[in-house]
Every structure is written in structure tokens, then in C-alpha cells.
Image 1 (cartoon, rainbow, N blue to C red):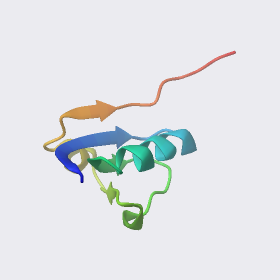
Image 2 (cartoon, rainbow, N blue to C red):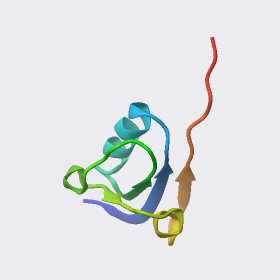
Image 3 (spheres, helix red, strand yellow):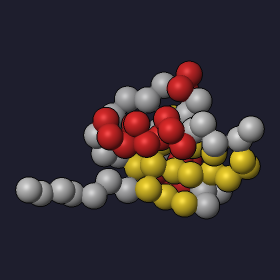
Image 4 (tube, helix red, strand yellow):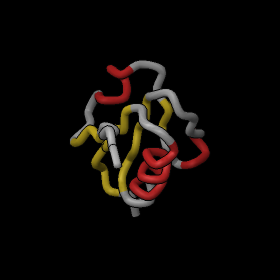
Amino acid sequence: MKRKIKIALMGGDLRQLVVARELAKVYEVGVWGAWSARETDGIAVYSTIDQAIEGAAAVILPLPAST
């Protein structure tokens, strides 16, 4: 059963998509960004940042990584 908490993910690479899919199992998830997600993944795909973050309890952003 999904919780009525919306989490928004912005941009990133396929790692963000994996996170979005896992979170979508429990929460309402909305994404905006350069990588492709499908609404059929249980994820709402938005065309603007404003739409994605509207009503979101949390926003997850990609972090740069270096080795």
C-alpha cells in the first residue's frame, strides 16, 4: 500500500531512476530531468520542475561523485 507522501527526484542518471522505482513501491513519486522514466513504472513524469515539486514532502537531487 502506497503512502500519501510525494517524493520528487530531479535529474541525475540511471541511478536516480533506480531510486525512483524503489521509492515508487511505497510512496508517490514524481520525476523531472534528463533521463527517461515512464509513467508505467508507477512514477509520475513532469515536464516542469514546478510540477514535480508541487506538494512534495522531499526532493532528492543527484550528487556529484569523484574517485
